[in-house]
Image (cartoon, rainbow, N blue to C red; front, side):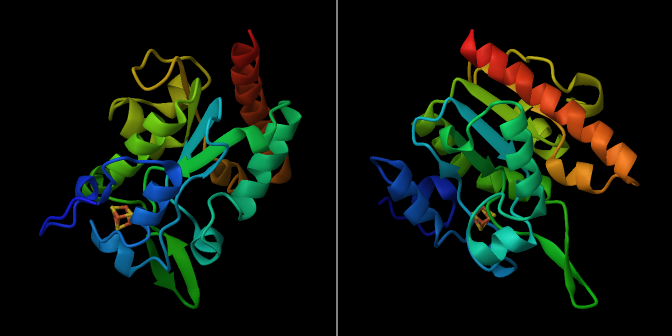
Amino acid sequence: MKRSETPSVPNLIPDRPTLPAVRDAARDCQACDLYKLGTQTVFGEGAKRAELMLVGEQPGDQEDLAGHPFVGPAGKLLDKALAEAGIDRTKVYVTNVVKHFKWEPRGKRRIHKKPSASEISACRPWLDTEIQLVKPRAIVCLGATAAQALLGKQFKVTAQRGTFIASALAPLVMATVHPSSILRERDDEARHREQERFVDDLRNIARALSS
Ligand code: SF4
């Protein structure tokens, strides 16, 4: 492993990276202050040659405690939507642009706090390495933070969701909402409608991957 006085991510990435080695190196990452807030690094998981990579914002409360991405309520919604879209989650790689949970206290609860641009930038080389190693045919950004981190600050999920975007990241790149936003909808009817739209976006990706 390269050594440096600065704890930046590029200095932590092994010279001959593999997914297990990079995951291992990320465990001790202190490249931004979020390591002080999160319980542990929550690295991406899934098939090492996954055709589809899903990228969210950051681990949530349950992911932080479990040490695995997308295992909380949003992950369960994601599982259901992938199944409805005919996508086998065991053939998908799931990860986040930021690998530690950023939160603030509200009573006894830990409330999600959006990562800053500098935290996203500090963490980005982990994600870039995951993309280089997995080489997915398709990347789907889940939510505005992931979409803007990967597709540019001007990207608007509300206007551009579900459409394929030309990108050097992968042959097929798309953004849609984060499943946690569906859970925050005001009532069952709105949640159901948004979940249908989310599944439609995933079906688009499934179709493109199979053609
Ligand atoms: S959020 Fe990313 S860059 Fe910051 S400490 Fe965690 S793994 Fe390192």
